[in-house]
Length: 390
Length: 206
Image (tube, rainbow over all chains, first blue to last red; front, side, top):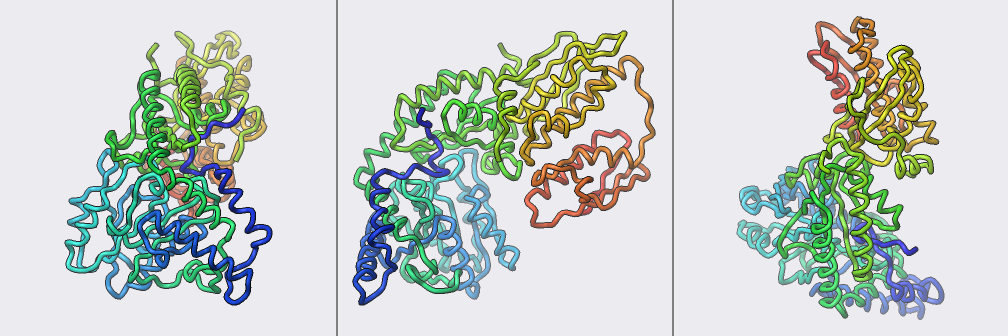
């Protein structure tokens, strides 16, 4: 039986067209970009085409796009590159307690190197506290970073309002956005939103693993983070797989040719999954935003009285892949920090399941999943000392 | 990190699940906050002190359920004294091993069983009074598992000093500041030692 896959934000299945687009770059077009020689120039012009596809998808210029070895590399190049090159202007950074681990780890790194970091809070739906943001801005604040669609609950941050707040300061505050979860699922125009730096990743949108991109607005200076030879990009030194870049561009093209259709389908499936779970399984709790301000593919829901790794394992043995916020399934043995910051208790975090859908999911898969899930939840509750209801 | 087939078998079809009405003894260990909780119920034949029936309930992950299932299998039919000697390593071995990060589940299952046995012994005046000393603290620290390797912190020589004076337990643990499990270990040491009413204060240096 084919695995039913609801973990697309961990990684997603490459589209068949993506694989086809990559093959020539493993075979006859294996060159690095190089001037004056035929193979190398062909690659140079292909890379320009790919760059334009990515740039057009977010309203940027090709010259503002860097290919990287993934979303985490893009985040590191942006944050380390900006803070190291601009420390003379100030040493204060703002982000939130629910941001993606890349942003939190980089902030902690700079905190150890003498920067001041303010971690602002989020409300119970996962929106960052804008009043706290306003009051956190100081004369030496040089950067604000955020996760556009939260990686756990999918809450979409109000970037336009944030930009206005940052612009109310009497000096420039650069905004870095981790859009790995949001990109290709929500319309993003970097110019309209006032984003200065933005990272995206291919493997979460049916592209290949090991490739991403960084948008660097013209005029924003980044210091070198990775020193060495530039083959493909000045910031991501060394090689980035050209086959992967080709696959990334194809994945983007495939989505943006049907952007509304695909994301409408994904949202409808997600809403159907939520409705079915709420109807068929008692004692559940939706985590994150109830409103429209939630990425279309994300559903995060807690099941009372039971623990998420057990649910995940049983679903897996039934051929269904999902993620959980339980401490038992995490390397650090800690409950999910985002859910805890949103005011959920330990039990609700341990019992949380995250479904991230894609255009390849079907209604039939959801029906099967909810049927299995109802059986599993019933079985695990019957074993639980916390469950006393018949 | 993968579970053995035996863990999966016991997880999917656990033995001895449920509650015994009017048990002769019972114990609950762990808490939902820690992500795992196990209750064990015993029926004991008073003449022979043999465990005639044993059942468990679990709020926890796959290995939590599997270790509770295997430990109840191992204890059934044994005398209280024999059952008390089952170690968490034996329970883990009976499951063809556990991933290192899951070894603490085995410790929890064994702990719950021993506490249920203790509950029976208390009720029937079978307990020998032990004088509380630092050796008992060291024994308790052997239940704190370092998740990266699945071995306890005493065996791994991470515990550099243990002292106990005037109700204050002083523990010196060697764990680097960049270790991602550092907070977990400290929390777990505290959790284990807080169970002793003899310990009024815990001082941990890392």
